[in-house]
Length: 391
Image (cartoon, rainbow, N blue to C red):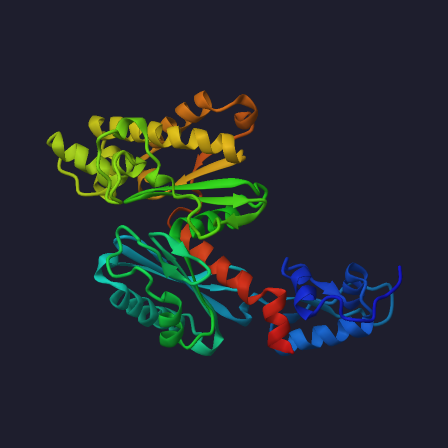
């Protein structure tokens, strides 16, 4: 095979081969890429200089000096990840492989407004960074998940129902100014949960749906291994699809009959309260279910059926191989997921469901920060960003 001397691929493209963590020699890299040894050597030196590569253990040799090996150094930089929910903020520091080094949770109402919430994210994030022994100079960026519609390209929330004062707020610019980092990426929280769940637990299932059932109901779509956001970032907003059981039920979005209005944690809590069992939100519903409350368990099963009504259509349109159910209500046991399975398997065509799995989230409470970290890492380590960094 002829050896290419020129730069058809830059340093960033070469680095993508090494992100799998497998050590390689210059000769192996040359064989995999078709690039000349001299080109490989120059690009390796550039990546070593910025710390993204490290010298690995020497490869075996039949004689003479064993060749040098090089591997990805995930500890070269770190990222901040923030999963902001309706009533909480989860923060994490992760290395460049996406492994979480340190994390913390804090109760905080999203309705407090963007300045209060984002000031906390910045301040607590820097403190968490210091706790890991890293400095702000080692920060590759921050990823943020928000509980509402987000235009990913601009990082601005768009008419989020439960986020007063956040509409069109420039989250990205605010955090860049507070943290001093050049990279701040923002997305819908369910999209990031889907990404985190897929990368960590289902990498062999490139067509996946992640459904979050908590204060709201949303869905993240992984299509051919990529997060599918749609043209403006609104893909997966299943919580505001109309369902038969909600004909006259008003939703906070202004419409009536939305799935969220009858099957979310808040909706179930309100139904339980009407029956004389006081419940405020998802947490109370979960506690009642775990305690064996018959009304709570019955309502969770029905909520699962309602969600299944919407998912049955989505399964026919999207044909996923796995549907992962997460969020606070998924922690109440099998009743919610059993209701989902009951309807999806009955209503969808056999070809779409013969290999379909409907399961509880494995990422649990970490799914959001894992996805936020992955989003930033993918950007920071992209061929274009690395080529610019070492040029």
